[in-house]
Image 1 (cartoon, rainbow, N blue to C red):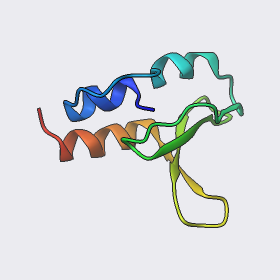
Image 2: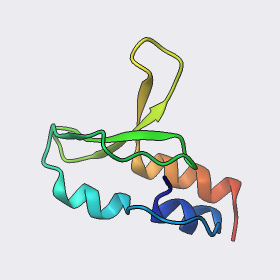
Image 3: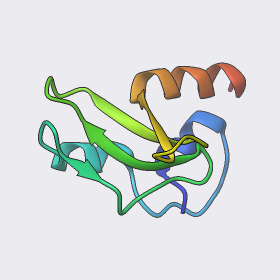
Length: 84
């Protein structure tokens, strides 16, 4: 699955299954959504912390299988690595 943001950040043209921004609006603080992940950015789920900050569960090799990275940080990294 690929998200709308992946295409926007990387200037790709993958078939889109969901939008992180739309799913984020449905999450309340401390809620998780593990139903959607984006292969393109390595995201395996979403989490909104107690302050309302959206964090992406980024695939990793540690015991839990992911690390939490802010949505903003991921977008900055991808926009720098794939300038338009």
